[in-house]
Image 1 (cartoon, one colour):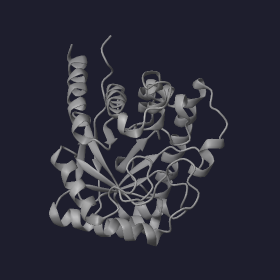
Image 2 (cartoon, rainbow, N blue to C red; image 1 turned 60 degrees about the vertical axis):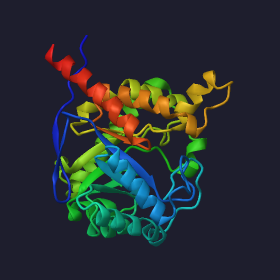
Image 3 (cartoon, one colour; image 1 turned 180 degrees about the vertical axis):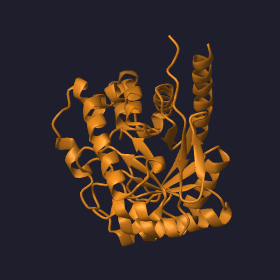
Length: 300
């Protein structure tokens, strides 16, 4: 049977609008952190971070997601907004100086950082907490009139390793229910629906195999009426699955590229509009093929 069509949206950002649906957009990840699970410390130096950002743009990233705080499982000490800003603002400003017009997303759950980053030129706020970890974030995003990415998360990073197991059949209903509540909370705060993109939060409070029901049934999230972003890049659940071909041990982060491409392709075919990735060019190429499959699925 043909693949289901992917709905189209006009995603309203701070100063412009992005068409979502005809082609998958790739968001490049830039972690300006010493301790992110995948590339912590690689781009803590502002100069290296800017060069990495420019490289991702040259490889086809439609937008960049700049973050200053790791949310790896088990992380205990949160970063203060001021520390976060000291890391990300020089990079954000330098990227926009080098490439004016770049669409930058700020990966933060702090309202104070969101305000300052948008004032500096960010078009999107990507809140991994889905407006839960800072009571001021919803009203801040409404006032900023920027694009928002609202992620589903279950608990906080320091809790993830001790959360009770989710039965496979409960994963998607939980995410659907919680994201519906997030959308309602955002609307009540004054965030316009056309500014929202939803992220099911692969790996965020979902342990290893709990992510596969979410990936397999991602198309059910279309019922929420918002564009979808999928961030499976280099995640630990991919490494765990690859243990079968890595001598019984989880594949290390640097060996998860092909699995990332496979999971991203699956997400696009299930309806994802945006892929958030560390390796841009492979994702761009895979998305181009998946988009063609979707196009012919709609026309045959």
